[in-house]
Length: 145
Image 1: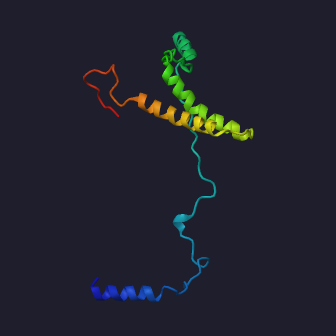
Image 2: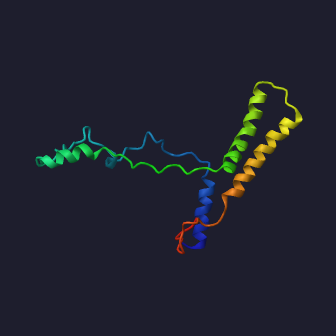
């Protein structure tokens, strides 16, 4: 197409933008390629014949769907400062929540202590978290995230 004919085509498209279609879609014939047979033919697939199982395979079938995970290792012992930090982190807001729901009159020092416990527990846990490599890693850490 030359630039002049492209401009003409474009003008025709723009000019006929708001025109209605000449043929209604109900008047257009249905294409034969879209016709579907009334009842599709179905193919039946029979399962293949399986060989008779051996006596040993019966024992395998019993254990096949059953999985017992190994016993997990015991949880690590938490030292006292970490326990205190966790109690402060959750205890301060828990006290404020219970006191607010029970409509207790709270003194200023109680509010300060609860908020300070929350902030102190959070800071203590973050400081104790550490950002260095674990002690048990050797010279080759592999992919460290």
